[in-house]
Amino acid sequence: MEASNLSSSIPNSGSISLSSQSMFQWNAFSSLVSVKLDSSNYLLWRSQIESVMFSQDLIKFVDGSCPAPNQFIGEGANKFVNPEFIIWKRADQLALSWIKATVDKSVLGQIIRSPTSKDAWIQLEKSYASQSSMRILQLKRDLQDVRKGDLPMVEYLNKVRFIADALCVANEFISDDALVHHTLNGLSTEYESFITSITTMKHLPTFAELYDLLLNHEKRLQNMHRHASQQVENSMAFFSQRGRGCSRFYGGRGRGRQQPHQNNQPNSSYNQNQGNRGYKDFSPAKQPI
Image (cartoon, rainbow, N blue to C red; front, side, top):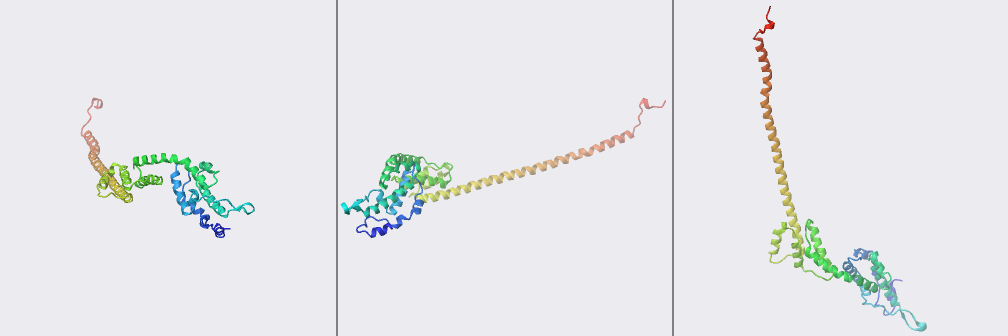
């Protein structure tokens, strides 16, 4: 029997009901809670699961605002299980199962014996609330020390926003002006002119507006660097080509000068032979006796 039908058949049971919508939305729930609780993400996990349970009208079982009704009603032979307790128990166990399904195995052992969703919730809060205080301090330091460095602009801005969102989950709200100042403070010197133009404005932009401005400015810088690199490459190619042309020019002149020297060799031999023909050899060994 559906819980809603059971509830409608019992007088005065309207204060505790479990709709079919809550019963059959596990797939949607698991997709909305994107993290499993571990020792480092309690604040994020709590924020997600609280929102989903509130939307499904289950948060009242977790926070104790809907306590369990008496398990039995009547006395003696007329004593029987309270139907409202059955409905309450089903809703509470649904909330408890959602909690157990969204914690890491290392955490599950702490709540495996918790009888109600409220007991499990309190146990997790005791285990991780103190760690959350240290986490808040660390997040504040991270926001003060955040630097762009070699990160692409979109990654840097998302990193800043993630820290701010994590602080917001812990009820530590960062004003938009403060977030803008932290973001500008983490930029490198090549953004100095941009920083000056922003800080001298009559009204600071919101972080969302600064987000778009910085992405556009990064594109301009990239185009400038690309254009400058192209000019350098073109200049190097020009001088390299010019150098090869000069080498061919001077090489041609050198070969032209050597040509007369090569042509003189036969002429020298020819003149020598002709000279030998014009003189007789009068050496004593060859004179007639």
